[in-house]
Structure formats: structure tokens, C-alpha cells
Length: 508
Image (cartoon, rainbow, N blue to C red; front, side, top):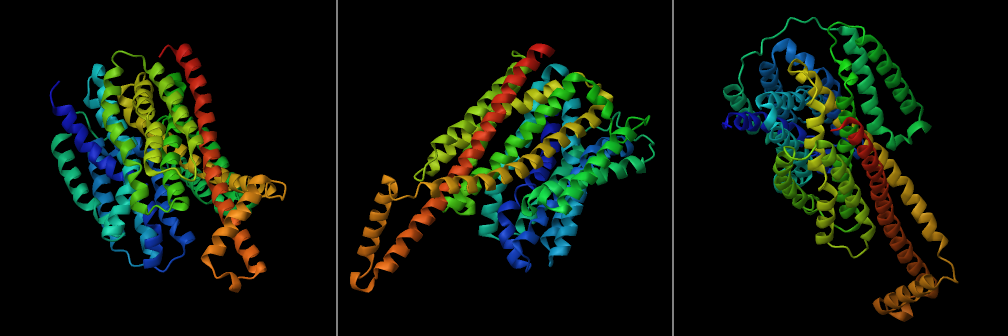
């Protein structure tokens, strides 16, 4: 094979990597942004939400945009728009301005992932698609992992504005490379009229869903009338979207692709793979920062060894697809993901960074087998003319999986912290040996640290109970994280069984 397909892959992946990176790189900088722009932490979370909402709305229609404007032209336009929006985010002087520019960034970025996948898929011959999808998987898996670590380093060393400014030179380079390397032959724009009704239904449905998922935990889900209304609006709008689009000759989103069993199966599995990647990226740094005293940079660095493992495994997975059926690799990936989540049972108060880094490697070990194999299954029955639409749908499923996963797991984590705390409190009784030993130990430490004559019995008792309660809260919090990892382990074990059944049924 000539080097041309890989050169094309590098060019388009550089742009997609930049966009996916921006979904996680801002997470660790929210505190700094809120302080600099005189905003509350709750207000600053809209920096994430504004991007995710507009990005999610554009994702499914990016296939139509590629046809309407020409895929290469549309892709370069998205890169330029994303780069300009990134610069404007960096110079924003108020929260409303930053939210507006982040929305523009999301609109421009929505077309990058699907276009990247479609261009790479069409650049490689059929027998080399494993290598092509390994490149796609590399971007989709490594970018979210690197984001928090890179964001922490940039924020600590420079300022939060540089997490946006860094996109400018990358965007310029990507646009130049795509202009030069991606062929234009056969990429003729098609005169298509915009389906305003279909787009309106879709935009309202996905937008309301994304806002609801991003804010549900803060407002106690369906206990809040606003969240209930958002989910209701989303359900009605998405139902109308489906009914409308299936009646159109040239729909803005080709839902008829879901009539292809392998594509539908791959999309469902990709939903959960997106959940795995995004939730695990969120949970582990949050755990070590909250209960082990890690700063943002150190917490992000724990994810790096897992990313390095990805660099090795993704090309290997691409080669394995030539010899092993993708269905078997999907089963293996699901099972290893379940095992990686299950080993969290070993977390203790004394776990160190080496343990967490090793746990992270196990958590992410199955992901390359999932991404590459699922893309191979998804595109195995897709005509070349539908590559753009198929890429848009599978990218949407991956992103929605991440949004659902983060929202649901955050709620589960909060709820189980209360459950674990209630259980531990129930053990604090005079007849419980551990409680009595803890009382005596803390009392001894406090008596050594203070002048006994100045420390009254009441103050000593109060101080001891306060120490025990703080230790209890910490233990309950860690156990809640373990519970959440165990839930994910059970989920992916169930998906392993489902993958076995589907693999046998579809002979993939």
C-alpha cells in the first residue's frame, strides 16, 4: 500500500482529534474560568453544556451537509470555523460571550468526527479497512484520555485561555493538510433543499435531551418540573423526527440505515462503548482529586499510561481483523472492560498512583477491540454513497452514550454515597469493636497533640467524633466510587453475553 491513505488519515484525524479533545480538556479548568469571569461553578458548567448541545445537534445532519456542500469543502469549513471559534473563546471577557463562542465551536466541530470517519473509510481498500478503523479508534479513544491531563498542565502552567488558543495552530495545519492531501474527485456538491421541518424536530429533540442529561443531577431528575418538561419535549420531538424523516425521499438524516441489522447492532454497542470511555475518564480523576489529594495535573497523568497502551493496541487490533472475526473481538473487548471495572474492588484508603494507573490500563484495555471491530461491523454493509450518513449516526450514538453515561453514573454515585454513609453510621455503636478502637485511637492522638489540662472532656469527645465522622465520609465516598465501577462491570458483563449471542446470530 502507498503512504497516501495514511497521509490522508493523519490530516483528517488531526482535526477530529482537536475537536474530541475539546470535549474533555475544559473539565479541569472550570474552577479557573469561573473565578476569572466572576461566575459561579454551576454557571461555569454551561461551558460544557453549550458545546455539547450544539455539537449533538449538528452531528446527525453532518452527512447531509457533506452531500450538500461537498465533503472536503464542508470538512475544511468546519476546521476553519472551529479554529476561529476557539480563538474567540480564548479572548472572551465574560461568561455570556464565552458560552456563545463555545456554541459556535460546537456547531463547527459537529461535522469533524463523521467526516473524518467517512474520508478514512473511503481512502482505504476493503482489505485494509482494519488499519483504517484503527486510526479512527486511535483518535476516539486517546483524545478524551489526553484531554484532562493536557488541560491541567496548560491551565497550571499558563492560563485557561491557552486550552483554546492551542487549537489555532493545530487548526491551521489541519486545514492546509486536508486541502493538499484529501482528493476532491467524485466529491461534487449535490443540490439538496434543506428540510426545515425535519431539522427543527431533530434540533429540538436532541438539544432538549442533551440539556436535560447535563443538568438532571443538579435538579434531582424527575423531581424537578423543568427536567421532566425537557425529557418530555425531547421524546415528543424525536418521535416526530422519526415519523417525518422516514417519509422523506432525501432525508436530512438517513434513518433507513437502521434497517441494516449489523449497522444497528454496531450503533447500540457503540453507545455503550462511548459510555465506557467517557465515564471512566470522568470517574477516576474525580476520585483521586476528591479523596486522595491529587491536583488536576497529577490526576490527569494517571490516565496517560492507559493512553500509551492504546497506541500499541489499536494498530494491533487493525491487523487482527484480517485474521479474527470482528464479533469475537467485540466479545473480548466487552469482557476485558468488565474485568477492568471489577478490579476496582481492591481500592483502599492507601491505594497509590501506581495502583490507579494499573487499574486505568485494565479499564481501557478492551476499548481498542471494541472501537475498531464495531466500526468494521457498522460499515460492512454500508454502500459508499451512504458513508457520510452512516458516520454521522454512529458518531451520534457514541456521543449520546457518553452523555447518558456521565449523567446516570453521576446520579448513581451521589445516591450510593448516601447509602454507604448510612450503612457506616449504623455500625457506630458501643458494642462494635472497630468503633470503640477508633474512639480510643483518636482520643490518644488528640491527647498527645494538646496540653491535657487545657482540653476538657467535652471538647475531647467532640473532637474525636468529628475525626471519626470525617473518616466515615471519606470511606463512604470511596465505597460509592467502587459501587459505581461495579455497576459498570455488571453492565459490560451483560453486554459480553449479548455480544456472544449476536456474534453467533449474525456470523460476524
